[in-house]
Length: 250
Image 1 (tube, rainbow, N blue to C red):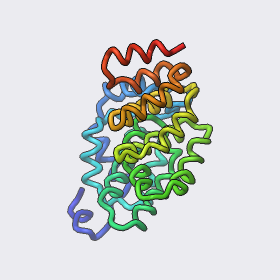
Image 2: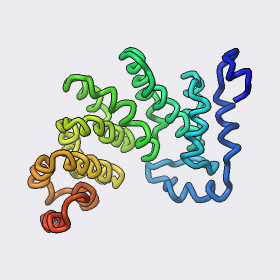
Image 3: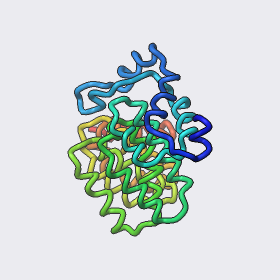
């Protein structure tokens, strides 16, 4: 960032962030990333462009432009280039984490929810959902949590559904399981592998904190869970118990 911006005489811009990211552009990575992220027409990240910048490099740029105004973040989130949007989300996460006061956190949470069309693939969801929406949910009542999570769960877009699931992580860390158990039941027959994996991941995290909670859920649902969801959920169990649960699968 130049001295003028760093000195505070003017605010940084989205264009400056883009230029900083382009300095790290790597042609080989740019060719590889679309295959890795499955940028295809199957409701994943269709239309995304990649310039070949790694996540650590994006985090470095995000740190440099930590004070990027929200209107400039909005410009980055509107871009088709994947790394521009991911960097914007990292900046937003960092700002939420260091923000003081519930009003500011709520404002940033609302900004995040208003721009979920930009959070269209698993890495974008996973870098942001639990650290913004999830942390905001921690201090809310069950009714307030439901009011936010239910519209996401009822969306036709798998990415918004994954936001709801991954946002439960901070609750799970605090041994609050009601929301993830409800979402797991809601998505028990979900056809999309990225929802199956997310639900299994969160169930596994719940089981790490209360194995009996996970066992009770599996007793009711293991037979009908998608195999991917089941395998993810039992991954940390002892080998013999994993085998027993897999035998439940019809």
